[in-house]
Length: 319
Image: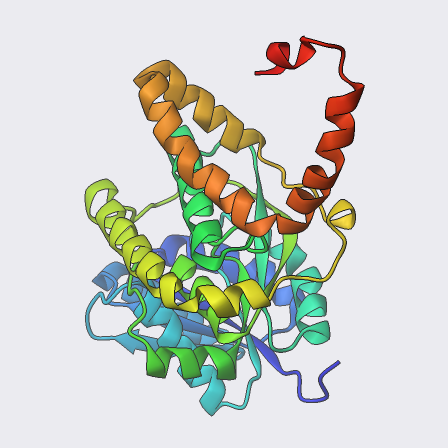
């Protein structure tokens, strides 16, 4: 447990002035200093944030001259947190969708693993758009390929605790994604850097009056380009990534829960047919093949015995 553990909260805000008061009220019981980064919001939001900063002694307000993106706002908030002497920063989105009440669990993990990124692992209700859910599973698969590991359970949740110093070192060395590509890229690159991620299950709700800044075309293009860069960056790192395998016996490892992934695959089958389904299987199988080598070896050792126990001709039924 770190003796210098000093957490704060960093909230990137772009035109969420109306929601910010509710978010800050939910944060108040934890007594954490809050840094709100206004990412070039409208005049109305600027005035709302000014009022909040005037009456909230625990709130520091930072302004960006123009909208630069969530990634830029978060890094600016982390820089301010480092200057103020904080060691860790809880990132909370300003739209009110996160279960802020789970902050103690995230901070406890951060205390125990001070060099790690601690992230929420979303539990969704029926309010999540299905397109978002399926899109997340595509990103999950790519992240598993980019890390040659199944350890990163969800890279897109904006409810997380950053170890400030390692994250800023990364941001100084690499040009990270500035918008919706930021959350995933920073987690993958921290993993490459030797900073693991740990996860806390947490409920995520999309408020009916919530404001989303996701641009279906532009942000999907950014995310696709990000995965291209990360995949190419993974290739020279293959030896070091393979050496980082956990020594835990395969039978003791947590089972990968892929219900929504299976639903996505079934949807692809129904909408696009067998060829598209088969093509999508290649990266999925590659991830499991690369990451589950101990289970593979155990299956290989047991398969001859299984083969001997089958009745003559029964192997044809299993093809």
